[in-house]
Length: 122
Image (tube, rainbow, N blue to C red; front, side):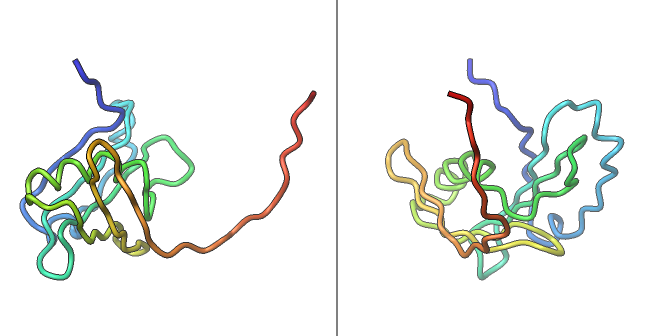
């Protein structure tokens, strides 16, 4: 039996995903993150949003870990191994996705927002 870390909700189209206005507080009892997705309406193979009830950020704009679940799902549904995805509503980004056997590859543009050092006790 395989247990998912997050809930996956598949919607009919991109417009439905974009229109979702979740009540994040009502989602708290779920105890998991919620990823919604749908086939893209043209430019993208699929779209998604990722909600994080109980976390500091209610909606993650671009989530690599969610795409490790979405890429195999959409590769099977679309019969494709290379896809272009978009995640987010107000903020978000595009992801180049590839399924190669049991591995997923995710690429895109990123911005460094923090640089630092972590010192671990010896």
